[in-house]
Length: 407
Image (cartoon, rainbow, N blue to C red; front, side, top):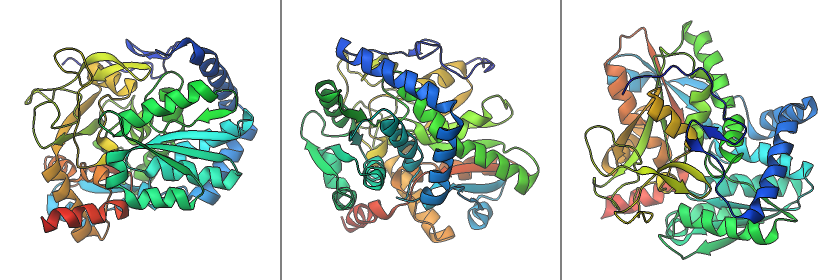
């Protein structure tokens, strides 16, 4: 695919990056989304809002996070230096708190006392429940039954924090269905409820807004790698479900054409629909998504022959989603970013290797990035570097991995 220089990284006023994005919602949500867009645009230009958010991120969430030189993974790879952006060290254990902190401040500005959210792996649910507890807001979390089963520890954490967790038994009982229920709730209760969407997807302004709150990852990483090595990295590597941790890392580097942007999708256990959650064709496999609309935005969507939303599979609850954020679709089609598939088996290999060599147990989502990072590093000279976004810690996944090992 021919590469198109990225000269403009912002969506237009209707929320489109090229043909991707937009706002495909019931009429009842148009006014609330307009209100949210206007409030967000005012807030991001408000010095008091930025100061309050920065203080919250620093003193409560734990920013800045370190950029850790993974020397043993580097030695194992035998090439470029591997650095880990340690988002797993944030309060609640993942990058999700960056976005939750920003949006809860918006909810307060808008006078909303009830907050709803969806969650897959549970980390966004925990982050939302955490900030709602901090500010005394009522919190309701929707979670698919399959994810409730896989992430029982995070369910209990949300409940400890005072959130009501509603199990969704419809459809595939995963993230897509949790988002559906959240949107239904919001339509019904829009007068007093704020929908705190957790990834860079959904109707405008959510993909733009979530990216803005997560871009602190890339801004910090850029400054840190320049301080550590004196030059930009050769590659940025991150897992991609909806895409918030990846776009947060990628965005501050978009105009640096010499830096490869590599997103890793869930290759699951096979190439057939229903066996994976990979929305793009990677050139070697079939069964990728087609352009379509899902949950308010136009992007690549996994669909069957009749255009119905296909079932998905991933060992990681956070990557088990039928579509991808619209800015990622734009970066893919422009050729600026590349997206590769990583199987369940390879993610487990990365999970174990990172734990064994670095004493860091990554989330299964993040684990999809470990083995590809090693392969990329092996192709580069020792004087270069690659950065892996270690988007979350693996406490939530240890029992799942132990159960798989026992089988």
